[in-house]
Amino acid sequence: MHDQHARLDWKDGAIPVSTRFDDPYFSLQSGLEETRHVFLRGNGLPERARPGFHIAELGFGTGLNLLATAGVLQDGPIYFTSFEAFPMQPEDMARALSAFPDLPSAELVAQWRRGARQFRLGALEVEIILGDARETLPGWKGRADAWYLDGFAPAKNPELWCDALMAEVGAHTAPGGTFATYTAAGHVRRALDKAGFEVTRTPGFGRKRHMSSGRLR
Image 1: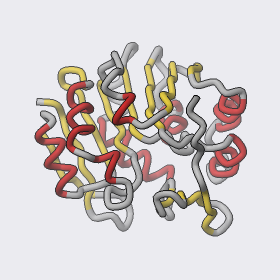
Image 2: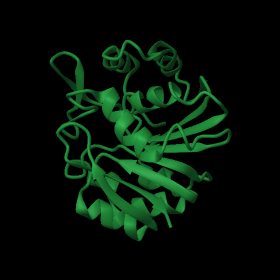
Image 3: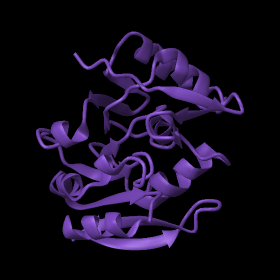
Image 4: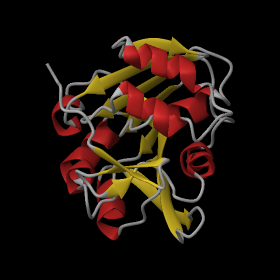
């Protein structure tokens, strides 16, 4: 049974920071706006979405990306699969998401508190796969139309950005599928290029000059 939970400190009482990776879970400026800029617009969403569309994510974290996605994708079913090694405790998730009162976080937190890792949220059919993605992704049977690569910073969480895992991301992407991530680190972009993506560097959110996105060749 996977029982390694996230270990947190809180910045300004509101922003969760992983003590394991010494990195905040979302932007210190505006986590929701960063999610929309990087992961939604970076993957051409909501415009590309259609019934049966599949989104996959490395790093579930607080569930913020899931909630932001549920808010703009109404025509389901849309599939959302997220890989998470260190799940948050429900009370920590509730505290973190209280920073975003416009999001319907109560339903997600209630599912999380019940221990549900497969559930419906609006138009989304959600599955959270617990464990190290280097072990769980290779055995996944799905292929994503869009990837959210949202691990902690590559310098602090290199395991989630290694060449082998990026190759698995490529292998689990549908034809014409895309990825988006906040990082523009050279080694990550090279790994995604080797994994089969046409990689583009684009303007990042806020003080981050660049981010990366791409489409499978």
